[in-house]
Image (cartoon, rainbow, N blue to C red; front, side, top):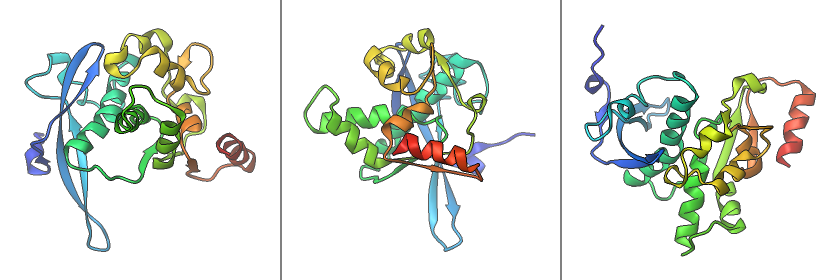
Length: 216
């Protein structure tokens, strides 16, 4: 069955780019207008790397949801988190008050927000003031409270992406958060960064208290 994207989504003319292991990967967005029960139209944007300027492999980064190996998934999370913020800015969304992340797939957006905050203040380095500003903008939710439900990435894989992918050594230490051993779990970053965390689903009381302790 052929699925023609143009029959359902509208291609936006704006472009953004991210660094992936020293390569520049171009991004575009497709818009879908979701109609709310109250009559409001909510734009939903789908990121796409299948562009002529990208390599054959980079074109496939957005081809599969939850697919591929750890390298593929990390590339996707860079596109979603860092690229997502850059695309929103390119689309004209410059006064967003809250960024909601469900699970950790988009949590790298915090790095882009931290860089934005530092640049706006005329600084090259991120400070605690930037962290607090970003914390107030971000809300993180999860419905998967076991380790098997979250992506984790080996340190040596993350370090391969370097500063060009916004994953310098200093940023890797920030992302490490509550991760254990030699793995980075981006879901643990929000527990260190975000202003608050909401828990979805029905949790046992002791699990809920644990999350409250981590956040507070």
